[in-house]
Length: 148
Image (cartoon, rainbow, N blue to C red):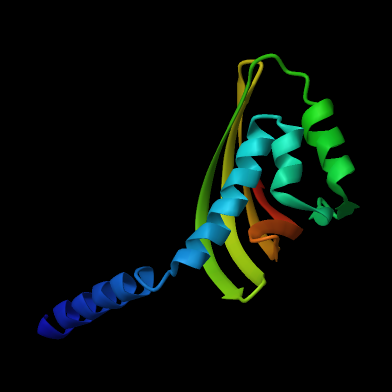
């Protein structure tokens, strides 16, 4: 029993230690992704462009998209009057190296559209670059895990 308790304490301490190793730059990079998705949720194409590079590439549902495709499919075609999208992120790994960053995370979006709710889960990888002292999403690859 003491061995199990010791093991549990060690696991808890190691998870706390890992959680504390996130640097401020990693948090800024992660917040860039959150803000990009906030813009998407708000159907705000101006902010969407502000948080991404001009040549952003997105791999969505087996297709290659650019910013115009994203705006068209996620904003212009989304004409629902009652639309609310709430995003929850679970950041798995964030690496920052000078002017480039790589982030892996799980994304869950709860989407309310015209009184109907859907929950979608993705595993995503994002590459960001630093342009004029601001992090921007350059590439996003999304794998659909579950839709309900």
